[in-house]
Structures are given as structure tokens and as C-alpha cells.
Image 1 (cartoon, helix red, strand yellow):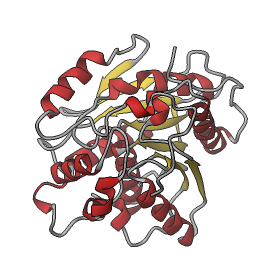
Image 2 (cartoon, one colour):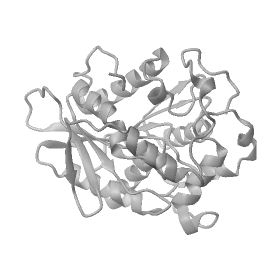
Image 3 (cartoon, one colour):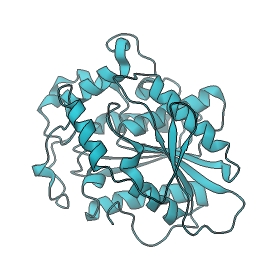
Image 4 (cartoon, one colour):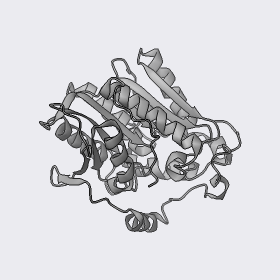
Length: 314
């Protein structure tokens, strides 16, 4: 991980806290997140079982075709907080810009629901999406941000293990992949933003539960997974000032060694979730444009991308 200055486009970086969540304020952050999330009305909320629901965004002006490509999106939150509604704007824009269906899964979070419950919730959503009659099961992608991207990587591995419908792309935004990053004492000194070493230890300890510090399933921490052969095309984006920078680059290197086609988008001076915090910044637009290009190539053969850059800002 570098000591680069924050990217000049990211003007509020220095004003942000190094972390926002820990064991003492988790309840408060969860409550604030619930208040600040502003769900949209142009979304179908579908409960697929007693515990799991998905927020489904269909393109506003779909082009004629028998089945639509689709993305399963998994929200971030360090495995301990967040809801699918927090990414409604992003999912709506992706659905409209690429003329695809986007299903955002509301999975249960730790520490109340440690591994494997969140992963199994995402798998239930994946099976549901792949079985929809208006969805093209041969053109499905899995994506997520932060812990959601960690779950996306784990879900991709799980589909490989179980031999079920597999994605044509995994789209991983600064994924939380490796619990062993918590043992790197030197990271305590880095001036990261929003997610630091203390938060990382809390997140992994909550998610892994009794397994923390003991034998850990590679499906809980995908960086531990031995055999990465046969995985789909991968897009991974991360900033150099993100706590997950090193583990992300290491994962891409291992994927490439396993013969997986990868696109790595590194943003100099980017902090964790910079594209969501400052969506109008030029560097955030470039990040999102790279995401959209990867999705368009995988799901639409590069034929349906609009010219307007994608942003979470209205």
C-alpha cells in the first residue's frame, strides 16, 4: 500500500474520518444508515424466502429481446451494516444505461449472522435471478462493493463448486477478500479513510465468528482459496490509498496466474469507496466508466453502452 497523497479530484478526502464503524457505535451507524437511505419508488421488492429479499430494477425503456442480461449486486458495509436500498441510485442507472435487469440483494449481516449465512443469502438470490423467465441465464454477472465485493468473489467461487449457473463476469469494487490483512501491524499507521485497520479487525471478527483466529473457510475469505482456475472474466477496481489495495492486487495476480482474464483499474490517491462518496469527481466518473465498459462487454457484447458517464448523483 502506497503513501500517495489523495487524488486532487477528491476534494473532501482530508475531511473524512479514518473510520466510521466499530463495536461501540455499530448500532448508531446502522440507525443513521437506515434514516439516510432514500429508497426509490421505481423498484420491485421481491421476497424470495423467509429471510432474503431482492430489489429489482428493470430498464425503463427496454429494447426488444426475449430475455434480458442481468447483474446481481451485493451492497457493502464491512459485513456488519448496510442495506440494499443504499445502492438504489447506482442500480437504477446501471439498469437504464446498459438495458439490463439489476437485482440488489438484502442479505443478513454479522455479528448477528456470521459466515456462512450472508453468503448463503446471496446464493439464494443468485439462484432466484438465474431462474427468472425474462432473464438470460447465459448473460449474468455478479458484482459488489467492499464487503459486498468480497461476497461477490465468494459467490462466484461457490457457483463453481456447486456446478450451478456461473456468471460471465465478476465485478469487484475494492473487495474485502483477506482476513490476514488484519495481522499487518504497519497498516495501523496509514492515513486511510472510512475503513481502517481497526474497522477491518472488527468486520472480520464479526463475520468469521468462532472461526476468527482459527481454521477459516476459503469461501469466507476468498483470498485463501487455492484453485482459481475456471473463474469468469474479472473486473477489479481499487484506489492506492485503500486499506484493501495490496490484497486486491495480490488476488488479481493470482487470478491471472490461473488463466483468468482480468481488468485491474487502480486509481492513484483513491480512498475506500471514493466513487460513492464523491461521485461527481472526474476520477470517480472514470472509475465508473471502466465498470460500465466491463459490464457492457460481458452482457451486451459492447453494443449498448450510452455515452453519458454514470454517477450516483442526481
